[in-house]
Image (cartoon, rainbow, N blue to C red; front, side, top):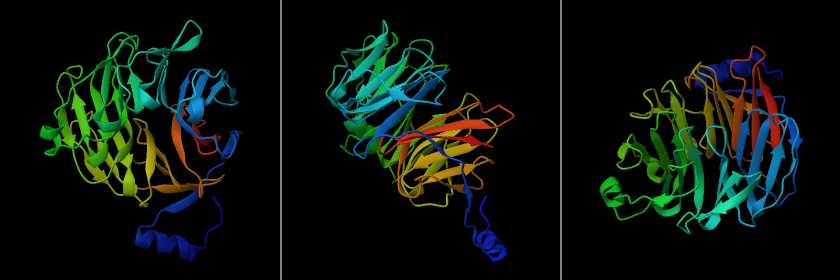
Length: 318
């Protein structure tokens, strides 16, 4: 941590301001000024990052190094899911790509809506969500998809169809979705019915729900909400920023990492207090792709960030 005067530390403590800490961020890949990466996934040693204009990066050493992958689309690739089931990528204009027989192939999604997020579990249950209330379900590991009808008027008391930005599919089959109007939807019957777990003002862009029931959602105006019961109920968490927060990771032990636009926040006590991380181009850039591995490693977990200009950053969370 860089030198801070005693007066600064005391003032920060008294006013409740976050202390800043310098993270030893290493740029493991640098793109061009016109590149952008939106999704990031790591499965063992294999990693993939996806972005605008069909940009694909691949890693075979757990994210230490990256190289351009084979192009298979010119559309913006907006999210990727891997590890639990098949590797799935969602894109503009309803694009869904599934990794099969050594390459990505397009599958019919049944929609032309922009798809912003995808997740699946090891039982073959997969969900993709996106613009104007689009919710897609697959029960065969992403081979086929169906568009689910949702009574948005009943949920929002309005005729608006909210954009949906993130989805989590648990190992047990519970589905959690977040989006506009601070909306959190939850289903325990495979998407046949939905419960409204939370509503508010800010859009929510990032989501994580752990197997132990603890989780977080993040979004506009520095908004962070937390659950301790698998997404059934949510409460607001105070943060030291009013910036746009894009993604979140948390561990059962209370470690939390949040990425966003000119923001990288860390908590070691479940969100009770925060440290703003500094380094690399965090003060000017944005990072949406976020993966953390080795949370139980005595040497500290490894975080990977992917975002603007096609950059991928790595650092040890000691």
